[in-house]
Length: 356
Image (cartoon, rainbow, N blue to C red):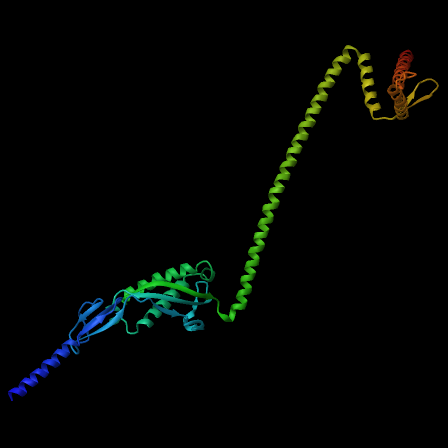
């Protein structure tokens, strides 16, 4: 009996030893262990390494990976083509329906809260993400969500998700929100594309019109400024000419009052000089028998030039010219004719005075 008692005690000791040894467990790096006593969490989480707890049924543990980046998908599963319309279709602030697929990446910041405060952890995070994105989209316009506001929508949704999971004590840290696709529903995609193209055409035409205006308006302003400057220059020139003419008239008037006959003859000669400068043929009234004196200046000039050429050629060959150049004779003839005209005009004036 004594030997049997010793054997039973030895067996009991071995069983107790094995039972105590079963409480040892290993926690890998990046993981933590949640220890429960009779199913209730009453001890801090065990870090990575070799740990011990009271064996079952006193205590139990659950290994939780806290370093893993977890991902939950909203609006699709595994592939964006596998859409979930009940999750992806949302209503914007301007009462338009939009189709959004996005993914949420998160880590665990408290293993105990993650294990005990969530019945279905992944589904909880998915519902929180859907709730947050619907609230953010519901406060935004459709064009803002589709184009320039995609990053801001994702950022605001991530902030709101973190606030919700903190309020739920879910032990989750939101790492990133990635927008996969943001588009109108497939049923109205064609009409929406047409509307987008029309909007782009409108913007393009506005830009072209603005570019045309930027090209035309400066040129029109430059032309207007040039015309104003030309008009101002013309006005200044006309005023200056008028003032000069008036001053010259006053000076002529003073000289005319001093010597009327000389001034009149000078004015006559200057006037005739201006007329003859642009005239090739001259008709001179000699006042004697109503005969007209015809002076073909063009032919005389050409004849003078033809006569000057032989004279120049003779001078080049060493011969002396036979006569004076015809230009001197022409000038002498014109001077004689002018004196004759002057005498005729004086005689006419004298007869007029006698008649009066």
